[in-house]
Image (tube, rainbow, N blue to C red; front, top):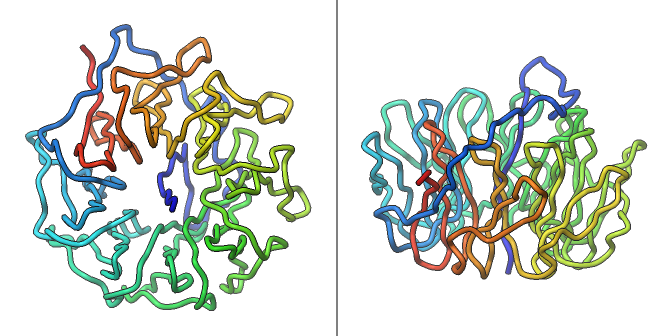
Length: 352
């Protein structure tokens, strides 16, 4: 079973601002560090972690996937358990009011980080949740693995939408500000409409894990045994020339090139003419990817450690050549952390 909920968004505008473009080619301009970086274990050398996210005050929180609750990065650099010491959590996301919400997976519902620093359950105390995302008008939607889609109301309660019986695992905004939901177990792709209803698109079946925008604002969907799909100009979701394979995640490099992570066939990239082509890594299983603060794109492998995109366009293994990694996240001081899913804890990127 594959899950994925890592995000790599260059910019999101909510509230009254229409989303006209998420990324522009000259928007991200990092300078590569001269020193070679090493990835090392933190003092958390055991446990499996699925996701990490920043709170509004810049504290990085980690979601455990082996029933050890929620952890956080302390100012002294140590990573400690919070008072939530049990439960499995798969995603964390900021609401438009700056409150951090945690998606529980093993029937522990949805939790929130309160202004006093305590993490408490919301009114949703059971059901498995996979992912959450903001609509263009700042409403937070939650994807349930087995109970449809819910949304956060202005009074702080989380209520069911019109989608009550479907497995949804990811949500992403199009360049026009429309929120799309990826369905698991053959539930296709759905879209949030202006009246608040979430309706099926032309894709009423099929399993999809992730969606992301290219640098020119095209939305691509990662399918399970159905290849890679694209949202066309008339609002239909149509197949690209990649019509098979299991695709788990998509992310932009600092240069604006879109990369696709495959569960079987390595890493692929979107070429300038719109073709999706294999990179130099033509086999292996990859779960996600994320940019470091100096603009290097790192890839988390299901089998072979952590990889990175070199300046010449080749993708190479880092010093971490084995192990299963699910996601990466930047702390407020721009340290990149990696979450292991095979009980080797949390790792970090640091210059030699």
